[in-house]
Length: 206
Image (cartoon, rainbow, N blue to C red; front, side, top):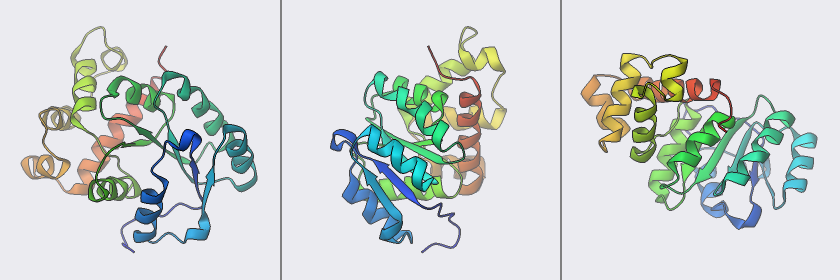
């Protein structure tokens, strides 16, 4: 177990349509120090809602591959307002990921990521940060510099946040961005998380 990670428990995986890579997530969480008995799984939305009310999970995984899937995020946040919600998407779904973050997701994971990449993303999330991939960085960058965009309407991102978006949109990794900006991994995690918080503050997209 890594001492720099926060391990919120219990964990709930909402695995409707078997869309989550549950064995991989369980393996990663075990490697990071999670006892298996504190990891629950719900196969239906009704069942997941009952589990949330009964167990009040602090870390929730939920797959959102369609726009309609975002509706349940409101239920998750109503049942467990202080929980850490990680949504699961395909890499090409930058618009949907952005909408999930606006709806209340704290971070996201990508379908098809290697076990090593997924574990690194989980480490970032459990350090209080978040992962960011180039497609989403490019979309958020367009929002930040478009006078009609939601970010621009709510206030510009900080210079450091703009630099992070610029570098990752050009396919730099978070580690490469940290080295180029002379920042620590923790600082980059925090900047990405701040970007997501500003996005969430805009509220759900139409």
